[in-house]
Length: 282
Image: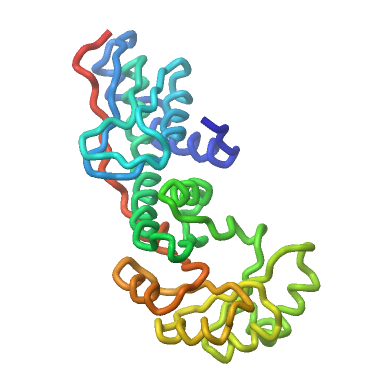
């Protein structure tokens, strides 16, 4: 598996410290310290697999030498009752890492599973993008899970893309001025995206030469009009209160380049995943 970035390793260390602190009182009290065995991590509901490298790292940090075998691949559909991974080694280590590993997996698989629903619903008619509405400190993990589910990432943070939003426009003094300044001061070759709230704003953004225009909280009818007005002069992104219950209406209204959905990360629920110690112990 690919090397995890430093911020994810720090997050894993923090999570272990949060749960384990000075030790596992229960396991220390009831287990022979030399007892070894194995456990299976399994799905208790259908889900999309994501985050096994994170779970592996948890056990490796607690007990170097613990064997972690992935039984499913990232992005793979998993049925209820199927195993995602097998852990072998000290039962004390396995039990100490159980909850932390599952907390990571339940979240990452949850985001990936929800993202798969959106990607399947879009069925190639548009590109579904995520947003920066992620759990603080989890940005890399949440966006990894979005990709595993079949959707795409918008910018990772404020540092790798320009998106001029309503407050930027208000602070700057208008759409045209904001785009002109962004074009002048942005790194060479970087695209300029701007958010607009109505068709008048769309017209201004087109005249200013924005590369991508985000249609914020437009109705399906307004999106259809916007596509006609734009006529291919810029790429269009639909955003704002898009969900599984209404995205079909937007998809039917007009073909847009992107549809950004904050719910992929801010509203994904944790899926049900459990760990079971195998009966036969070494």
